[in-house]
Length: 312
Image (spheres, rainbow, N blue to C red):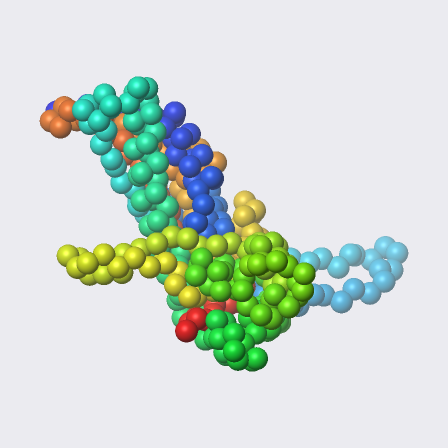
């Protein structure tokens, strides 16, 4: 028998803190949350004319109107779908914990990992789409013996593509742990720090690429077919993403991508989702359900650039 479902504010808080503190996921940076009061609505697509067609101003004569500017806007629609899941806390498991609530919090963290990973997969899919400018690395970034291997030069060239196409400079560079580890040993990057002892730090690598944020994607997936031997690999592989990312709650703010979150279902949560709880006596367990209504969208393809196959 199942009891009625009730909102669980304490576990909702636990879940949202886990989202904020979670490491290794880059989806919420590359596609920042926009909390919407509607499940489906129009959103503004980035129009580069707003940043490239700047009106030329002449001195205003007394008594004449001021030049009036307005944004040129086009739109598309988002529709938030429920990517939620639920997890049981069996009575037998709860008894193993000295504090009963710890069992619930542990379950929420496990379920939160599922939600975050699936969001990461969806964000990667929109950045992998054909509309985002992309290219293979001219020379592999781990080909240290080849003097033409130049990760910093490649990223600078991509920055110019974004800036010329949009009038904006990208502020985020995302890569997997595998790519990052290679870059900490790249001779051209290390050459910028002649007194560095051992692998470079993340901040040194970030400064070499001249970006505000260098984020490391640590999510790992099983690439083997169902029933086959486990074959773990980094979800983002050896792809690298350069992008303009803006978390402002402003539909007209330029950003490469957004995650639209239906905030009415999320219980007004600052980040993430809402937790609901009900009792299922048929399995002697409390069931915690996460509702997560989102839609991930590329807002401005001109604001991103993707490198593929940067490693051998």
